[in-house]
Amino acid sequence: MDAFAAALGKGAALRRPNMGQALTVGVVFGGFQFLMPLVGFALGLAFADIVAAVDHWIAFVLLGLVGGRMAWEAWQGGDGEEQGPAGMTLMLSALFMAGFATSVDALAIGVPMAFFDEPILVSALVIGLVTFGLSTIGVLLGRAVGPLLGRWAVGIGGVGLMLLGTKILIQHLGT
Image 1 (cartoon, rainbow, N blue to C red):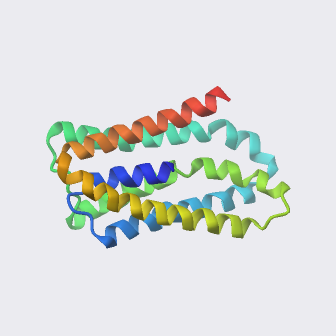
Image 2: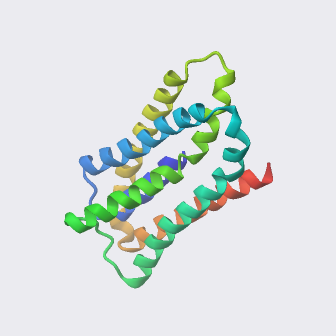
């Protein structure tokens, strides 16, 4: 759901996201959600406490940076459109950062999967495919919201990412 919320904001921030952009967001977010449990599983039990101790801080900082940049661009009057060669590089770097940030908790989930008698690859594949589908849909739904809000869609999406990072931090610190 974190990836869906981020994809919704991304879809709203883009002027007219097309199916290719929606699929790109879905692949990046789904790919990170697929890979991170595998990485967590590989790290094993030796690092479980360390991963659980910092995953929420990593997500908070990365989502704060990406969301803050988006909100700043909206405030400064940027047009919110990420097209062209330079924009595509910027878009992909921000997309990878958001994909990583929304999947850090999946890293911690992968560690205890070593205790279960379930195949980690099947679990990771299901997580990745569901995230891919929801993220792609999120971008397309965000497309409907973007024209209504204009450049402020970028700011709203950025604030949403910052709130998402804050929610992750508060949830982990509260437990």
